[in-house]
Image (cartoon, rainbow, N blue to C red; front, side):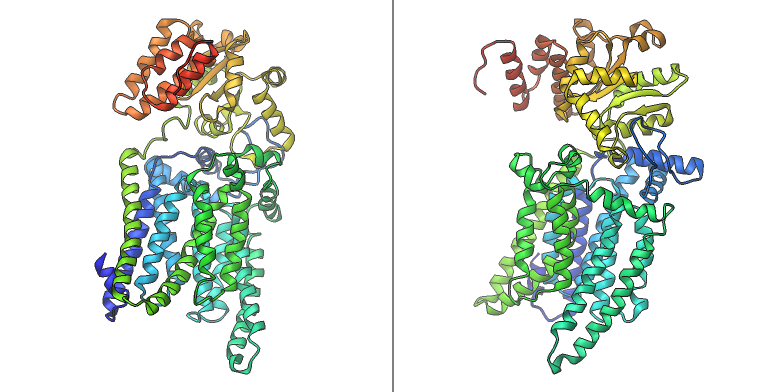
Length: 614
């Protein structure tokens, strides 16, 4: 990166441009590589199912046929994303979706850089590259194959158009007329399209503020320009609001983003905030000691970016501050919005920090060595993130399959036997993480009690579901009323279902039929006895059955040591929950990880045995 450091103050425009473009390209490549991991999110499955049904029926979805707990019509504003995701899947499977996601992230970052760039500037590119790589790496767990990735692209495009218009690189109403058109597309991709209104309104407020504060005669031209831009942006704001009505659902579609927003409660007292992990405030997660890398880095990146507005030359840009503040508030309310805040924090922060660094260079005594040291430090940060991204990709190179332990692929075969034997949909009590996958695999042949479409659930229905999960006696009453045919729930993550698994394992009404990588399938005994063969009951207390379960894991994860160990821990937890403590300890003895030793210690303590300190 020495050529970069030398070009920071160099005179040759060609060298500057090469250094600038190289840095931005490197940052976009590192970001794309950082998010190039197998499918981990569970919402993608019901999105794919919706896209498939739209294609098959040739009509927009207006009612739900997959769940037994939804209420009211389905206002499916995600239909644009769903058709795109299904088309990608048909063309290249899950790998095509993952690659498209990575390409969208890289393209969005490039557009963000173009928004704040006004000339060839390697210093701005260096700050942008370091901030972009670090922010994307920290927030990579939030950059899943979801509609938000498309929304990030729209945010980049909105800011690009607005910045060019404000800087005078494009003039007149026609130059920003693209925004209402983009708003139409965005409104048919994800309900967060209201961010388009917010961003335009912030630039409108910035133009009005500039016109108001430019009161001296010398700034008359600037005042007139700002006032003229304010009038244009006011029309654009109204146009974006009107454009959001251009969906298959009209005025009803405008209610969805506000309904979602008001289900978020930063104090965690709301039912959906407290029990949907992505809606929990990052502050609450840190207090509970459950902060992810995105949550942990949020305060540091936020502090750096906000301080950058106060550093010399202290140019407080009201439009940028307003847009960033709006996204900052949403991030404080729900940790899922950290990603959106980071997205604009990178270009705005890079612009401010580049200006401050340039001022510092002018005041430095040994300017050359200061530049070399500074460029080396930021380049090292970029290279370190690149190293982490390459190592992660090497560990998880199979992009065509879901990430291990995320979906219950091993339990589907038994459910297929049920659906093949029934002349009606099979009712399955399952987790929100698994509901979407069952919808994708079975369509209307199943009715799931829960999936990721929480907007379709009333607070009463969601509270009833949570009560059944947390209190098995409540589940028994609910199961009698709803007549569930099967129960498919995780045993490891989240751990909330473990009490229910223990209860079902000891119940005479339910038979353990299949265990998977991290899930268990129970079938109602009256149902199973009437439609399944006599071998439907899996008895893990039988040594032969337990050996068969272990051998299956050995076969499946022969060449993947970490996944094998995790699968054995999950198997041990299943044994423990079903009352087979001795066999659980046998499985844990095969694993050397600390969490396996901790679980073994807990099981031994539960058995009343002495345990050495770990």
